[in-house]
Length: 237
Ligand code: BTN
Image (cartoon, rainbow, N blue to C red; front, top):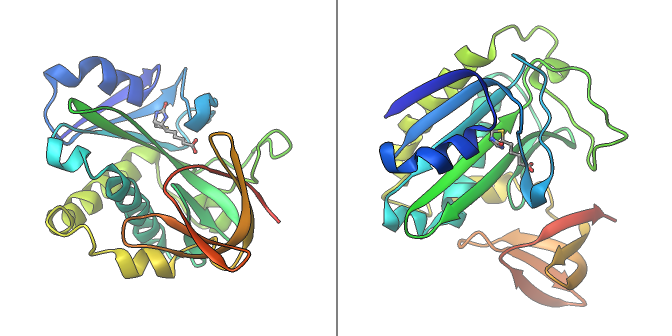
């Protein structure tokens, strides 16, 4: 496992996309600042300089790339476990790949890939930032510092801690895709919530019943359980 750190970069995801041929499987890249950080659905990912974790890792193993839904959930599990180890409560996974604390978004995960060449997992985790433009954000944001005022550490140290935790958990996980099944179900932020979801041109409204062992969201729509494998939750009703 290799870790590269940049003081400033356009985007850690973009860097891996450009350099994947020269880099090993499971290379981690972090940055103190991104000038072109991006999120899902081509949104901008803004993060104050030197205040947050901006981390991406590269997967080149074809068998693992095929299991990208598990890799995405696993990444959320690592962030949840990390936050719980810092003493935070009410940490949950908002399907498909956000991490929430007390109903606010603390981390977002972006997967980008080109099968069978690479899969890149980018994680933006709010650490010390306390000013968020919640009027402009689609969902209210929080950070470790806002949730725990005595938190005192820098993003590089915390990134290293997350990478160590990742490696520790990865060794077990890569042989057993279902090993965090129960953990994911127990940390399902959307459980029993009535949601509006957009999947391509489809708009779905229903109550979330579960996340199944293939990482699909199970939604009860007029007493019928519908399996959703991708999409965006636009509203919690
Ligand atoms: C989202 O919630 O939309 C996902 C946000 C992902 C942001 C991270 S920060 C590190 C990596 N580099 C990027 O440009 N994006 C991801």
